[in-house]
Length: 245
Image 1: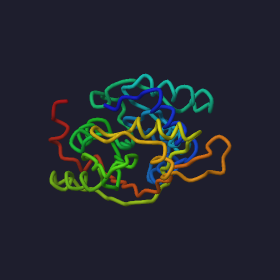
Image 2: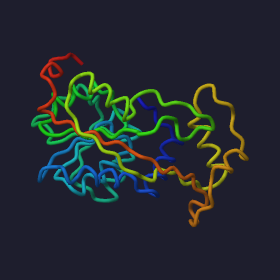
Image 3: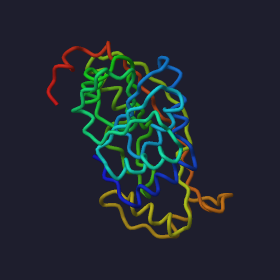
């Protein structure tokens, strides 16, 4: 489970509200949804993807186990008057909604097998798995490989389990804006991987570019390819519905 902190929440809010990449992800998913769909945003975190999805479907069930993260979503729901989002603090993999969701979205969340199990039990339509399509952590000074759950890793797992799927990739700006150099240094220290050396302001500054924004004068570009895997609930073998949580 991802552990949100005051700093990681603030950085995610800044990135979401400046780059708008959640809207780009939603734009890939919304055209495939049935009319008046009820969609589950599984492991929604701060809920910016839930907000983006809510503009094109009847209801969104935003599910996460972190109360701190969901508090941010509740504030945004009230501020934006997004009345069609239902917030659930729960373990997504133990839920049994009635009726089942028309679609489920797993954005950087869940292993392949547990995702299939949840979809088989909770969804009547498509599941959309948004995956990182790169090899190394983006916000480290050294080349530190990601540990699983990438597009290639998930494709291999689904293929090994003989589950049919469709896949596509698309580019998105997923950079990080900063209010100051001190803010940027804190960011890299927050996301530093175990065993990685301490970072200096000089090292961080070399990665940034000036930004035409009074609020965010510095920006760390990160133009990435995301992977989108689509799995139909009806194509998932029955054995996944019978597995214990």
